[in-house]
Amino acid sequence: MDHGLKGALSLGGPDDCLAYYRAWAASYDAGFAQGMDYRLPAHVAAAFLGAKGQGPVLDVGAGTGLLAERLRDMGFQGVIDAADFSSEMLERAGEKAIYRALHRVDVTRAIALPRVYQGVVSSGTFTAGHVGPEALSNLLDVALPGAVFALSINLRVWTGAGFDRALQALADQGRIADLHLIEVQVYGAAAAQVDADHASDRAAIAVFRAE
Ligand SMILES: C[S@@+](CC[C@H](N)C(=O)[O-])C[C@H]1O[C@@H](n2cnc3c(N)ncnc32)[C@H](O)[C@@H]1O
Image (cartoon, rainbow, N blue to C red; front, side):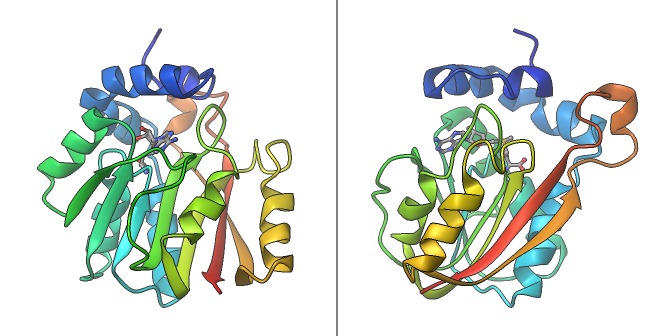
């Protein structure tokens, strides 16, 4: 399989996804992120800080650590922990020495971490072939009441995967509050030369508080 965005968005399940990122980890930053002018981590970082998010923060599907890097660029000094099920991606993230801890976890299952997080952020993980809305409840289980969430959700899967219904249900159940959506472009202008099919992808950043 060609290691790039097209392959990543057509993954068939968790085993497929793990194998894919094992091979993609080494070239992810210099190949994919730079080549596509990947803006999503910066948008999520800005949304989180705009909502007055604080640490400790859990970065969900942290990958190579691009979102934590953008948080630091924007002046965030709080503790950030990484959560990802790919040890190869976490290894790259660890090299950047930004995270306090690297947790190898599958966020679609109950997460064996204490309920200590004041912030939960994620970029690029809620998308086709990756993680669906079933993870939202697991993430709320490790968040303190009042914790600020800023999670990107690719608009290609927003309705089809049921993110709209899942977030509304959590609001109706009183598990989240103050939900608002910020629509952003995932990539910058350079992406059109690299991958015209995905260059104009958009994501909603779901910003809310845990109740
Ligand atoms: C597109 S990358 C995004 C990485 C980083 N957040 C960024 O914006 O560059 C998606 C990440 O989600 C991770 N991932 C996919 N499914 C997961 C799951 N069920 N549990 C935890 N991590 C998962 C992958 O290993 C990968 O590192």
